[in-house]
Image 1: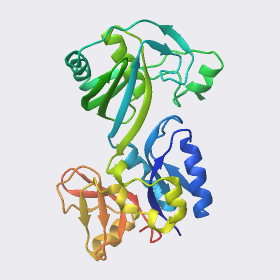
Image 2 (image 1 turned 135 degrees about the vertical axis):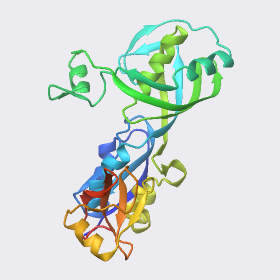
Image 3 (image 1 turned 90 degrees about the vertical axis):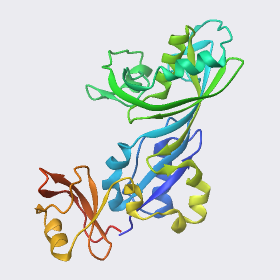
Image 4 (image 1 turned 60 degrees about the horizontal axis):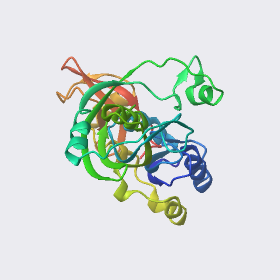
Length: 290
């Protein structure tokens, strides 16, 4: 059975679901998913998983992500980006680069962020963007996020360009609005490129055209999605017990999730140390995953 991962460069104007549909048609397989939705207007890295590899999506979705962001000062929209309806306008004085860089640095670390109404988060079973499109606004609970790096690049006229590395669940549109609030001027996200998801980088991403031209080359091994995890190789007896879902005497002090291989170098699952004495199977794979 086909299984693998594709590092797709999603173009602006194409939804993440559109990319999944394209991959399904190209490879003739229904079981396809992606790690981390990108807005239709945004571009960048979208890891797509095929077949049994879809069981690994959660381990990539949890990884941090990097973005290059263009922010435009002077107006606000109902969506937080430049595709929405303008709801406020105000002149914004030119700000020195040092001031903008300092404002960006103030967002470093852990904080709470209120998700935008135009998001896929569900409230009482309904997606927020569906409620927003019907004119309904609901209270959203703040979510914990972490910004590990944020760098000022350039500022010209009413635009600001910066790079950011952040945890999953961070909404860049909301970050742009918060930056505008901190400098005292409405702001929107005017362009967004996701440059990295975990170990999947923009430099190595393939356009949908490139995937279609050479679909075999585009498909990476399943464990390419797990390179950020520690590796543990088991003996034949240990591997058999692991595959039966049995905890085994721990051969590693690692307590984070680990990618587990047998003696032949075949990925057999995800395991985690417990109480410094046991290796506990978290996810076990059959022979159809490579």
